[in-house]
View (cartoon, rainbow, N blue to C red):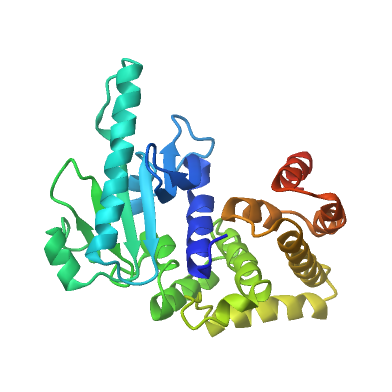
Length: 314
């Protein structure tokens, strides 16, 4: 499991965002190299969900995409490492196409997206990136068509509906503003509830079940702004006041998830992001069953088999 809560949140957020449109692989190992890509997205020819998206997200889902996320400002060496992984992946795609005697078209080649909270002027200058559209601030392209790479400074992107998903990955004031916008979305907006549920789930995972992460001064903590904490508290309080079971269900799920994750960590060790995400999706009853079953687990394979036999309840 990653030791950086922001990284964990970023990977899960992007994976959940992109999975309706294709295949998503977390921590994808670059073929032939002991290097890992944060997130690899491969679009499907006919996604089950017709994409009604625009802006950068539309570009991301239109082609194989490598996504690397930085909570701060990446150095030139870190960007060079990302470029190396992109080119290794490109070579593997070309080799596979040659083996299958398949001709590649432009959108078969992967594009690299480096999403950073900020980008220094020095890095932009050394990378010689350009801003293709002056109205799209914070978005910088490599001029070389072979190096299909876009650098995104999250704190600089325009504040509009197309960039909301990006700004949720930013830090401090930028992220706070994005969460305000999520909370202000109409209750029937399909984006609102999934985003809020995701923020709640990862708050539980990163803060309440892993408090030791925040005892380390060097750990990067996801900044849950007060407006979100107020919404979370109000949601639970409102459920209790009107006698609905929803507030109690949230509390039960929270408690059951905390217990299950602690038992799993003690029994079989730290879980990677993909496994932990599957556990988070279980219902309260399933989490209680898992807490009992974990006593018989001896390895990660036992957990994988249990999760396979107990898919999340709809």
